[in-house]
Structures are given as C-alpha cells and as structure tokens.
Image (tube, rainbow, N blue to C red; front, side):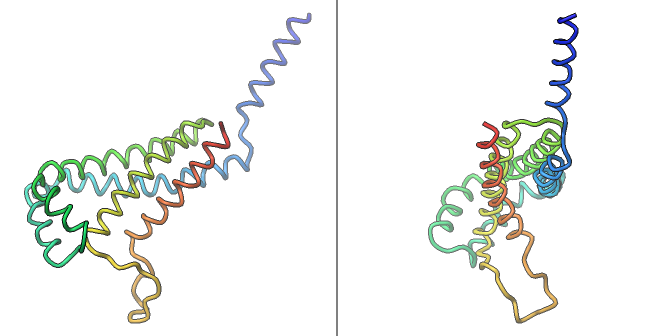
Length: 184
C-alpha cells in the first residue's frame, strides 16, 4: 500500500514539475518571439547571399567601394588590410554565419518553448552576441550615423532595421544572461 502512495506522489511531482503556468508562457514567448523574428531575418539574409552567384565574386569590389568614402579610422584599416585581401573567405564566412545564426536563433526559440532550461538562455546569449557583432560590422562598414530624431523627413521610418537589430541584440544578450544566472 505504501508503495502505491509513493508512486502516485512521484507522478504528481513530475506533473507539477512539467506544468507551465500562463506567466511562464508569457515569459517563454517574450524570449522566443524576438528570436523567431531575428532568426528569420538572419536566415533570409544569409540564404539570399548563398543563393546569389554574385555575392562572393563581387564582395571585394563592394568593399573597395565602401571604403573609398565610408568608414574612418581603425575600421577602414581593418577592412582594407585584412578583409579586402581575403575577401572570398570573408564573403563565405558572412553568408554562412548569417544563415547559421538564423537557424540557431529559430532552434533556440523552439527549444525555449518546449523545455525549461538554463542552456537555452546560454545559447540565446551566444547567438545574440554573434548577431550584435555581425550587424555592428555592417553599420561600421557603412559609417552609418547613430540615428535619433529625423526632422528633415517626418514620413521616413523612425529607425533603420540595422539599428533595431543592434539594439534588440544588445537587450536580449543582457536579458538572457540574467535569466541563465537565475536558472542556475
């Protein structure tokens, strides 16, 4: 008789352990939602580059054009001395990194919805660090000014997608790092 009661109690404990409350679902969606969106953005960006025959072959020319009037200081030197001399390697690195990053973010988002784990938030942190540096390199290569208020054209978008990705990546690095420490 005591064995049956213990068995039922352990089953009930397992049910309670796997129970996801509505507030847990809201938290899961708040972490997974941005990951799905940015994962889709990176995946499509990478696939566009992979399936475009011209990306790798024209990357060096694109960089030469960008550095002629674009970035200043140390970043221009990095682009000219390192990236331009190995443009085929960096073109392949960029296109496959973007596609892989998209898959990782989408996979981690699904993993977060299915299971409760500290490791999913660690995966999110590293994926968002990669996202942050990929978009930061793009912004630096274009010498994009930091955008705030644009009074010249009130009909233009308030913030470019590039800066939106940068800010979301930075925020999600912090949020997922704090969450992974809380689940420890």
